Length: 150
Ligand SMILES: [Zn+2]
Image 1 (cartoon, protein in one colour):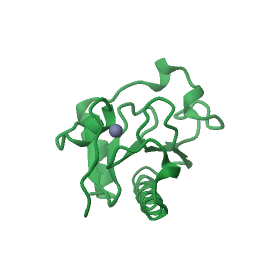
Image 2 (cartoon, protein in one colour):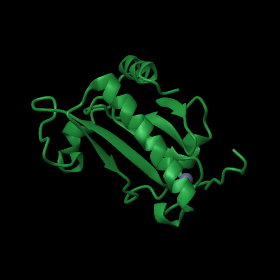
Image 3 (cartoon, rainbow, N blue to C red):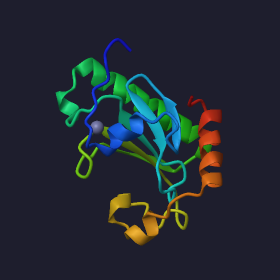
Image 4 (cartoon, helix red, strand yellow):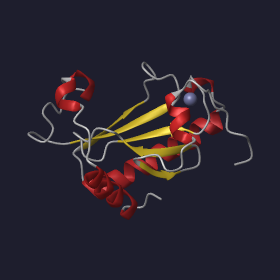
Protein backbone atom coordinates (compact mmCIF):
# COMPACT_ATOMS: atom_id res chain seq x y z
CA UNK A 1 0.00 0.00 0.00
CA UNK A 2 2.99 2.29 -0.42
CA UNK A 3 4.16 2.45 3.17
CA UNK A 4 5.55 0.09 5.77
CA UNK A 5 2.94 -0.80 8.35
CA UNK A 6 4.01 0.33 11.79
CA UNK A 7 3.57 -2.01 14.72
CA UNK A 8 3.82 -1.84 18.51
CA UNK A 9 5.14 -5.03 20.11
CA UNK A 10 2.91 -4.75 23.16
CA UNK A 11 -0.32 -4.06 21.27
CA UNK A 12 -2.82 -6.93 20.97
CA UNK A 13 -4.36 -5.52 17.79
CA UNK A 14 -0.95 -5.21 16.10
CA UNK A 15 -0.40 -8.88 16.98
CA UNK A 16 -3.68 -9.83 15.31
CA UNK A 17 -2.78 -7.88 12.19
CA UNK A 18 0.51 -9.73 11.82
CA UNK A 19 -1.20 -13.12 11.88
CA UNK A 20 -2.82 -13.72 8.48
CA UNK A 21 -4.44 -16.87 9.81
CA UNK A 22 -5.91 -15.09 12.83
CA UNK A 23 -9.22 -16.57 13.85
CA UNK A 24 -12.24 -14.52 12.84
CA UNK A 25 -10.38 -12.59 10.11
CA UNK A 26 -12.90 -11.69 7.39
CA UNK A 27 -10.96 -9.63 4.85
CA UNK A 28 -8.55 -6.78 4.27
CA UNK A 29 -9.80 -3.41 3.04
CA UNK A 30 -7.86 -0.27 2.10
CA UNK A 31 -7.04 1.03 5.58
CA UNK A 32 -8.18 -1.79 7.81
CA UNK A 33 -8.45 -5.49 8.42
CA UNK A 34 -11.96 -6.71 9.24
CA UNK A 35 -12.59 -9.28 11.97
CA UNK A 36 -15.78 -10.88 13.18
CA UNK A 37 -16.08 -9.80 16.81
CA UNK A 38 -15.17 -12.53 19.28
CA UNK A 39 -18.63 -12.35 20.87
CA UNK A 40 -21.67 -12.75 18.65
CA UNK A 41 -24.54 -11.82 20.96
CA UNK A 42 -25.31 -9.26 18.22
CA UNK A 43 -25.14 -11.35 15.09
CA UNK A 44 -22.72 -9.96 12.54
CA UNK A 45 -20.78 -7.62 14.87
CA UNK A 46 -17.51 -6.73 13.14
CA UNK A 47 -14.38 -4.86 14.19
CA UNK A 48 -12.19 -2.97 11.73
CA UNK A 49 -8.56 -2.61 12.84
CA UNK A 50 -6.41 0.12 11.29
CA UNK A 51 -3.46 -1.49 9.50
CA UNK A 52 -0.95 0.73 11.33
CA UNK A 53 -0.51 1.23 15.01
CA UNK A 54 -2.03 4.65 15.67
CA UNK A 55 -3.64 5.72 18.92
CA UNK A 56 -5.80 8.66 17.88
CA UNK A 57 -8.20 8.74 14.94
CA UNK A 58 -8.01 12.53 14.73
CA UNK A 59 -4.21 12.40 14.36
CA UNK A 60 -4.45 10.49 11.07
CA UNK A 61 -4.20 12.53 7.86
CA UNK A 62 -7.71 13.34 6.65
CA UNK A 63 -7.44 11.20 3.47
CA UNK A 64 -6.70 8.17 5.63
CA UNK A 65 -9.63 8.97 7.94
CA UNK A 66 -11.88 9.20 4.89
CA UNK A 67 -10.64 5.91 3.45
CA UNK A 68 -11.09 4.25 6.84
CA UNK A 69 -14.64 5.54 6.97
CA UNK A 70 -15.23 4.12 3.49
CA UNK A 71 -14.08 0.75 4.88
CA UNK A 72 -16.54 1.12 7.77
CA UNK A 73 -19.33 1.95 5.35
CA UNK A 74 -18.50 -1.07 3.21
CA UNK A 75 -18.71 -3.34 6.26
CA UNK A 76 -22.01 -1.77 7.33
CA UNK A 77 -23.45 -2.39 3.88
CA UNK A 78 -22.41 -6.03 3.97
CA UNK A 79 -23.87 -6.48 7.47
CA UNK A 80 -27.12 -4.93 6.28
CA UNK A 81 -27.33 -7.27 3.29
CA UNK A 82 -26.35 -10.34 5.29
CA UNK A 83 -28.32 -9.85 8.51
CA UNK A 84 -30.97 -7.16 7.91
CA UNK A 85 -30.53 -5.53 11.34
CA UNK A 86 -32.93 -2.87 12.62
CA UNK A 87 -30.03 -0.39 12.82
CA UNK A 88 -26.25 -0.24 13.06
CA UNK A 89 -24.14 1.29 15.81
CA UNK A 90 -20.75 2.74 14.84
CA UNK A 91 -18.24 3.05 17.66
CA UNK A 92 -14.64 4.22 17.66
CA UNK A 93 -13.72 4.12 21.34
CA UNK A 94 -10.11 3.33 22.17
CA UNK A 95 -10.81 3.34 25.90
CA UNK A 96 -9.46 -0.17 26.42
CA UNK A 97 -7.10 -0.81 23.49
CA UNK A 98 -5.25 2.23 22.18
CA UNK A 99 -5.07 1.23 18.52
CA UNK A 100 -7.59 2.83 16.19
CA UNK A 101 -10.46 0.43 15.52
CA UNK A 102 -14.13 0.69 14.68
CA UNK A 103 -16.91 -1.49 16.06
CA UNK A 104 -19.76 -1.94 13.59
CA UNK A 105 -22.56 -3.41 15.67
CA UNK A 106 -25.84 -4.58 14.16
CA UNK A 107 -28.81 -3.99 16.43
CA UNK A 108 -32.05 -5.89 16.39
CA UNK A 109 -35.49 -5.81 17.95
CA UNK A 110 -36.38 -7.56 21.19
CA UNK A 111 -35.96 -10.29 22.26
CA UNK A 112 -32.88 -10.92 20.12
CA UNK A 113 -31.59 -7.51 21.21
CA UNK A 114 -32.45 -7.19 24.92
CA UNK A 115 -32.19 -3.38 25.11
CA UNK A 116 -32.31 -1.81 21.63
CA UNK A 117 -32.31 1.76 22.97
CA UNK A 118 -29.03 1.40 24.88
CA UNK A 119 -25.46 0.88 23.77
CA UNK A 120 -24.31 -2.72 24.02
CA UNK A 121 -21.69 -1.73 26.61
CA UNK A 122 -24.27 -1.17 29.33
CA UNK A 123 -25.44 -4.78 29.10
CA UNK A 124 -24.04 -7.31 31.59
CA UNK A 125 -20.79 -8.82 30.36
CA UNK A 126 -22.14 -12.28 31.13
CA UNK A 127 -24.88 -11.68 28.58
CA UNK A 128 -22.92 -9.74 25.94
CA UNK A 129 -19.63 -11.65 26.00
CA UNK A 130 -21.04 -14.97 24.86
CA UNK A 131 -18.21 -16.00 22.54
CA UNK A 132 -18.80 -17.73 19.23
CA UNK A 133 -18.15 -21.31 18.22
CA UNK A 134 -15.79 -22.11 15.35
CA UNK A 135 -18.66 -23.44 13.26
CA UNK A 136 -20.89 -20.46 13.96
CA UNK A 137 -18.06 -18.02 13.18
CA UNK A 138 -17.43 -19.75 9.86
CA UNK A 139 -21.11 -19.50 9.02
CA UNK A 140 -21.30 -15.78 9.87
CA UNK A 141 -18.07 -14.96 8.01
CA UNK A 142 -19.44 -16.87 5.02
CA UNK A 143 -22.55 -14.69 5.08
CA UNK A 144 -20.46 -11.51 5.22
CA UNK A 145 -18.32 -12.67 2.30
CA UNK A 146 -21.45 -13.62 0.39
CA UNK A 147 -22.65 -10.06 0.99
CA UNK A 148 -19.57 -8.56 -0.61
CA UNK A 149 -16.74 -8.58 1.94
CA UNK A 150 -13.50 -10.18 0.81
ZN1 LIG B 1 -1.40 -1.60 17.62
